[in-house]
Amino acid sequence: MPFDVARIRQAHPALAEGYAHFDGAAGTLVAEPVARAVAGVLGGAVSNRTTAFAPGRRALAIVDAARAAAGDLLGADPAGVVFGQSATALVYTVARGLAGTWAPGDNVVVTRLDHDANVRPWVQLASAMGVEVRWAAFDPATGALPVAAFEPLVDARTRVVAVTAASNAIGTVPDVPAIAALAHGFGAVVHVDGVHATAHLPVDVAALGADYYVTSAYKWSGPHLAACVAAPAQWERTAMLKLLPSSDAVPERFELGTPSFELLAGFTAAVDFLATLDDAGTPDDTGTLNDAGTLDGAGVLDGAASRPRRERVLRSMAAVHSYETRLFERLLDGLRSMPAVRVLPAPAGGCPTVSFRVAGEDPATTAARLGDQGICVFSGDYYAAEYFTAMGLRETGGAVRAGIYHYTTADEVDRLLAAL
Ligand SMILES: Cc1ncc(COP(=O)(O)O)c(C=O)c1O
Image 1 (tube, rainbow, N blue to C red):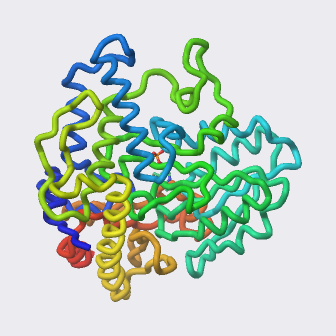
Image 2 (image 1 turned 180 degrees about the horizontal axis):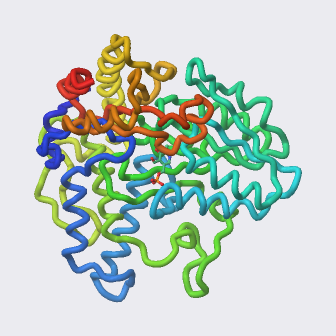
């Protein structure tokens, strides 16, 4: 599969500043067509949603286009796509929407590998409803979160199993389909945090067995906007407080107030951009906002546009996965060759994200030292609070995190290793 990283980098003009971005797990740079789509809405005639006049119809179309884009990215029904300010906000929406039916004697299952966004909302709602919280533990020696960790926890009173599709700390990809099958066998709902995984892997929510799957576009070259997808019938069973005049229909009832049309247009442009990653050629940069709520031609490459976008997304993300995996091996080999570097264990085959510590150095100092050399890495717990507590590292500064993204180059990996 062709993977032209030079072309991809050209589509991110901000890379010209020269920073080496290993901070994608905290947020990526946006692709240029995304910035253009956002600016196109802000600079164009886009009113609030109405069928009465064209600028209002444009707003309606922007929303529909973004739902279709999320559907193509994740293999989901566009009618079950709910947008929100962030993944965190959406998990709270879903947790509140489900918790009303919980009763003492029920339980929810969360993991110690997850980002706190897929932990705390469930823990807090469980506490409010008098429901037990059960913790699935990862193996600290390997970083794996096996299905066996869930087997003793899930039973007929389990209402929700909340699990990540990939760890934002160490990249572990749990066997979500098997975990979901176990949960479904007992009638539990499966809530999957796809925020880290979506940037690195082809996603098919049906294959995962996710009843809800949440993703945040700023982790994959898009704007600061998140989406949670579920079957429309699942949303129908999800409660939501809303205003009297606003729609009670799915998915609109979960989107309080007026949506950000500019970010929705950016979301669509980001999915369109991801769909081009494995194709040769240069992105068409003639895009202008049209009445379908998308950019004409933006990000679509000659000869590729005839294939359905879903198919192009899957091919592109498969190419991303193999490109990133190769670079990640280079990074891991380099880190492991340094006696002073302790790499936190993670199973092979995960997402290309590693946490490590340098002997005798506080992780924040390592990050600042690299930052001074134009290398962007994060340090701390990156909100994987339970993971770092279980590893006994939270009190001492967590770790340093470096992640490969599809615009990372081998030269940048070597720069990071040399700077360390
Ligand atoms: C795995 C994971 N889940 C959830 C979140 C929270 O996403 P958001 O910032 O959209 O709330 C993050 C953000 O870092 C994450 O990495």
